[in-house]
Image 1 (spheres, rainbow, N blue to C red):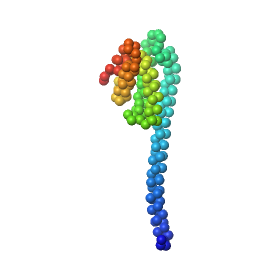
Image 2: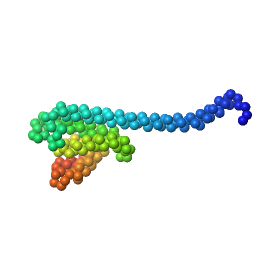
Image 3: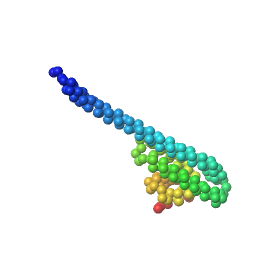
Image 4: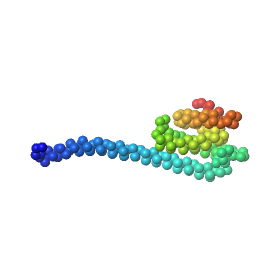
Length: 179
């Protein structure tokens, strides 16, 4: 190799840095972007979980409504209690919709599917309550159409899963309501 001047050495080194360094920098950038996206998804899930925990505190603060019992209240509720229960159900549907919009995707990766499965379990738990199903048609008015269709699909699956003759008529009413 011929004697290279200082400027020629610098130029040669700049080519080496460009050839090796640029692809390396792109790979590092993509890895960092993926980490950041995963952290954002986990942060969203954590915030939603915190909101659900706050919702459960609200349910505990209104224990006279028997919202933690799967079968609902064992006695008739007053008009004021019915109104509070409906408001709490409205908060719950809004929380479910927010979770749906922020987490649910048609083609989820394994991590997102795992996060969504928790929310699907919460939704199913509430859909199994006759009082919640009875209030659902009115609560879904004005909600996101994809969310509404998803919830109605869950209602239909739950109705099909229930033994014959045990599914309350409110399941059918909530699932058949159209806008």
